[in-house]
Image 1 (cartoon, one colour):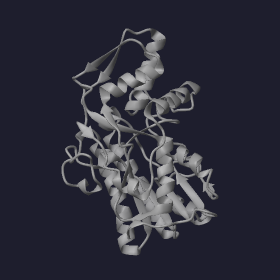
Image 2 (cartoon, helix red, strand yellow; image 1 turned 90 degrees about the horizontal axis):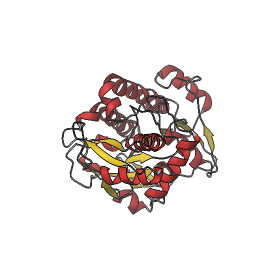
Image 3 (cartoon, rainbow, N blue to C red; image 1 turned 120 degrees about the vertical axis):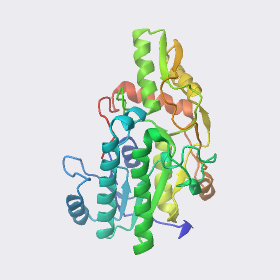
Image 4 (tube, rainbow, N blue to C red; image 1 turned 180 degrees about the vertical axis):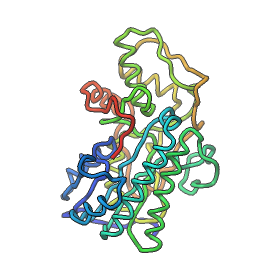
Length: 324
């Protein structure tokens, strides 16, 4: 199948793997408005990198749907410092969850990918057809290769066994429950923490990695969770599908917006000795738009909500990754 379908979540049992991460917790919140039973498993109860325990758990709990949001994630520094972790842990999660889901007869599986699967110099905006057409961005290739493997696993199980497994590729996400580790977080969370600490310290400047010129789009995690549920109900294909906001801005402009939201009034400095990453990364989200989905959270409002969540301390301030 290559496009639209209809799947009713009413009465279904839905397992969210990675329910404590930023995306997984947002998906759990979104599913609360569906007439379904949400299943979760704490990592102390179930190590999803181990296939045999995962198989036993799925066989005992019999979900109809699996949302695979479990992953080791992080920013440029974390990817550079922990390449083995980012490659091997994510491959282990994918092999375990996807194969076990097939073995117990899961009806629908949604695999959470990443926009970093696309080549560093992909044609813009990036269509799903750009996958594997060029070299990856070196600063996150370990994570990207693992995510490509997960996407290909879903395609393989669909083609060989007819399993209704789909892959969703989000743009840069931010929002409630993000990871605010000082060294290993993504850009939005890192800037929120940095500007907040600078405001408290009355620091005259805040340094931002790179030149500030790369262009990015950002999507609130609540919007992405809504897109995941929408796609579970309305999409079936072996082709991955992009989910983005459609709006892009430079890292410099994004940093200034975060500073304004946080209330930091000092100057921004750009450390050009640090890597920029991919020069531009705007997803072509026309396929999901064609199915009828649109984002709802404006960037400034979403950042304000994320900052409020940071102040409440519900994000992860010390963890290296948002894992299962």
